[in-house]
Length: 86
Image 1: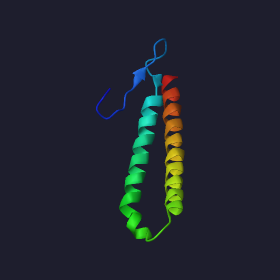
Image 2: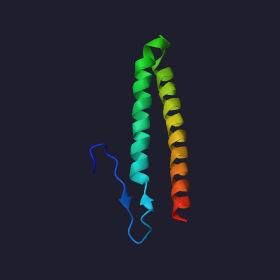
Image 3: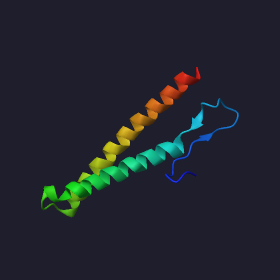
Image 4: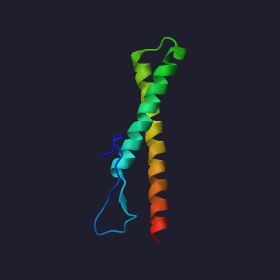
């Protein structure tokens, strides 16, 4: 596996363009989550005093947003792959 943790594997008995995207998409989603968490920590002091519950709610919103964005990226990638395979 490459150092960045992202690996593409071609499934046998399918077109070379049919790639198992799950490991790659998972790695992309985790990277987006890491970026969102790091940015939250950078900006945390600007929020002033908030409770632990409020902080958890903010993180939940960030992770939900990352998941929605990464899902759209996955759908777009799979759509492009299917179009290219035709």
